[in-house]
Image 1 (cartoon, one colour):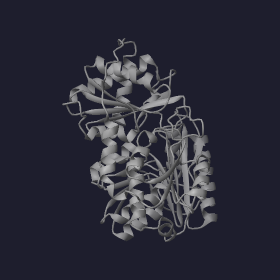
Image 2 (cartoon, rainbow, N blue to C red):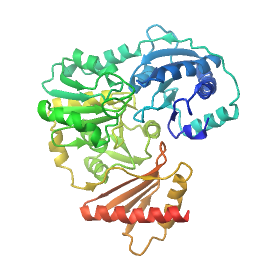
Image 3 (tube, rainbow, N blue to C red):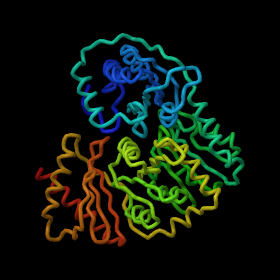
Image 4 (cartoon, helix red, strand yellow):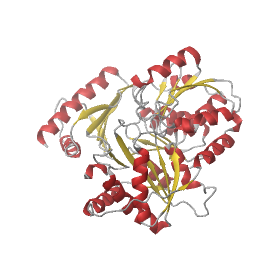
Length: 459
């Protein structure tokens, strides 16, 4: 077992190497002791990866050893797992006090992990790190096999909820394309679409954890080639999903709509909302929200961070550029790509032209996320050194207006900004740059990268 599997907002590692029988049983046991103190009823779901059911058995053994009542919802989308915290299973009297989703999300097929909710709140940060310390300190404890679970059908409850909530979309006259990427989106989405009598065509619907057609990460352009081609030929609007269906891509004939642009679109139908964005979001989003009378808050990247900040501030909406969209407005405050799909279709039905609205926004030049390879041990030290160097930057460095250090460093320049932050899930620095001037965006990238190299050398 290695401490690096205990990440900022979930537990993630390679099956058998880091997530093996001993480590997962121990995680289940020590997590189970915390769940037991809250009431002890925990629901488990898992994604399409071939080893997910094996990890379910290991985890259940640990949870059972801690005295929990373990509910098994089978293969589901991550939002269905979250949903289980808000409904009572039809065959269970007790309320669910925790949930665990077994998923590697969009990571390569050898990876897997756990997204944990306790008492309707994310289990993350210091709590996960403390769980890691406790598990590693007791790594020789032996836990017997006990895979006893009570089967529950949260999936049907979720489908019924969506069909009822969006009954006004029934028979909508738009040709919809969806690409599930062989993840778990189609454990629910086509049944919802069928019951709403929507006109759709689907790509790679069958859950297959080997991901034979393309990697299930819709934030990477090459993974969208097939869905874009089908949209061009036969569709009006297209949606693509990551491996566990908590992240969405929205595609029109003109735009790949990013998460911060989606937030601007969704918020059009909310009255003076509070909207939270991560540090990678465009300045256009923050400025436009404020111009409309909304309250815009910049916060840390990460689904757990944003959910907690939403609860703290009472925000109606939150977003990440990568396509995590969180609705508290008419929903429960977690990231759900299926729900986000239906809310986008609702906007279209109400006459909003997505391309026209995006065209109205100020023009900026933004890079995609640019990743700088480093190590788990060095990434945070490099960012700390970079902050130090920015106190007295080189003479040819662009003029700095201010620095936001809520998550890494976001450097605001006169006509744009640059971001450097340490990824919480991989051994890389994540950078992004934006300017109203294309040449300046490139200059910001070059100057900041030179300073990153210096930070690497001097740390």
